[in-house]
Length: 499
Image (cartoon, rainbow, N blue to C red; front, side, top):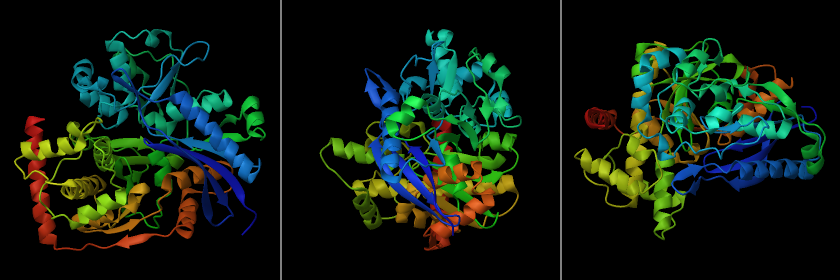
């Protein structure tokens, strides 16, 4: 072991943000929180936005707190965020509009209209990205539909982490993993699919150069460095999409695994070296997103613990504050296999009365209506586990080989019931941890960029040495889960006929 090297990871999620100092001694990585803040959507009249200036103010607080606590000698700073959302700048580099939140209802119905302009087959062939109404290209098309003037005056489009990097450094670039979430990039060339974007009638003059994960962006602006009490610390683009950073921290030691980055979303997939773009992956609506070290993340976006989070918010608005631990305990006590939902139904995408939406879904599909809090949470968790099984089967088909282990990383690993249900439903060993996968992956990519770690394999060895991992083996009868899975498939088939 040598002297510790310090990195600052700024990790922004859909509910909160935090600054994490990564202490790396050459073998192990230790993370320390220095600042946390809330990061929910802001509703103005009838539209959801991200409060980007507030977020940037909090990011500067992360830097100031890190320097005040640990001194100014940081090797690098890196920012990761959610995907798809963006800011547009004018010729003077001023923000033209508050960035919209991807859960805003303004994009409802956009996919059918988009595919009337460019066929879905062509869109997928050029991008390899899962069709979701939240994707950047469809948000931009919506701006064109409503004749928004900002499209005509915009000179720069920056995805959210790149917008914050610009405000920190003055440099305007786009990192590949975050660019890939836009459905505007070509995974074969790792560059913008300019011709496709133009077919939608969306400008391309505002696109910036795409850089690989782990590339230097620039150094802190002098005014920010002075205000924070530090020097011109390098800013590195880690794998800027938070899931891409989380996948860096998957503690796998052999290639026969799938991962689930578990949090607000459950992103389940495998790593590949080339995109898998075919009729099969398009029909299953899988995505080929960019990863660190030149990898591709072949994965499925699954609704995830958003279902529970939004239920909890609904109950809180009604005056009942259930902790997440209490909700899990109630789900444990609830009867199993009563009702299931398709987690990715459009009914569950936007904020609202989630318990009512779940009850309505069960009623629509001819199932018993969940009768209480525990039953609703149990329904969500079992349905997620069954969706993991469906996704695993597709991944094995695409890979042409059995997947032996599922690694679950991220905050969702703290829900031990979901981890056990995932093992039960898939009949695979589940290895859970680390909890702070995104922050670890962010720091480890910075460490690779600055020469402190040589490879992705070495980074994952560091994760294994630095983390307490929990192992789950399948329990319950396979026949019981097979019967539940058959019911789940029937619900999906029914929903496909009416949705």
